[in-house]
Length: 106
Ligand code: FES
Image (cartoon, rainbow, N blue to C red; front, side, top):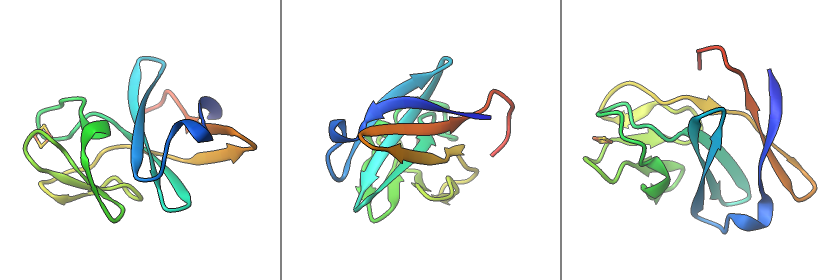
């Protein structure tokens, strides 16, 4: 496990997201309040990579395709079923890093 720089903090305004790719994996970084969250961008429903374009409500994001909703904190589906992977976020100055491991798991 290691941390990988994926963005600069100033690139992601409040209540917005940025799509990043790490080792071919698409990850949505969301900025909510004073926190950043990182979740796998691929919805558990039909495996469409769209969660960075989702609708934010509190710390939940709703997939724009068919409306499954996930917690940005846990990745667990609040509506629909299943979960998406989450990643630990670390801020170092202006750099935003996420914990990334190639082994599967949540
Ligand atoms: S692909 Fe996300 S809800 Fe269907």
